[in-house]
Image (cartoon, rainbow, N blue to C red):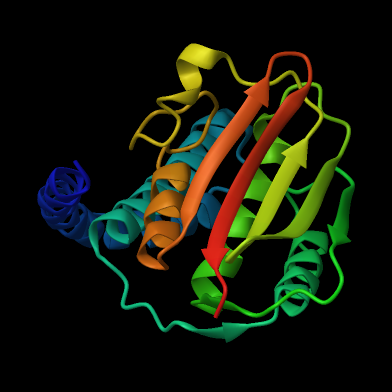
Length: 222
């Protein structure tokens, strides 16, 4: 089953990478043209709304193409020994500077954790994406917590929120490409799971309606 899934994702990746590459070329021309047009017509009340739509949607298309290329183009992982506490410190610093992460973020790190085998940049990207998702999409959430623990031969990085939770029938689909319950591209969790899998780890979700959700990244000890 794992081999079939790998082959399916590889074929899927080649297809979407090719499409995204072709779309990117006209988008490179559209995006600066949209910004230039907005600057030239600034102050013209008759076109303000339409220019705002043009600017916003070209930015959204650019983000979609970037996500497609990220999903379809396997990254060469540089697995090294990483200190979980250092990873959390960097994550807290990035989250505090992220304009879309508005919920309070706290961390509970178990002392004397062993080092994990990870690609530091990819791990940071995954955890920041999970925090960002919780802040944007967890309805009713008042805060986000990071819980870092040792579990036998692995270390777990859990991103938890106290929101409304995710329905059971949706939990099986949230890691599928293009499945989105919000305004995003629907690729973030698919990319996150692939990045974790390529680090020989696992990404899972546990959620109960009315009690919140927990996304857990499990990575092997170095």
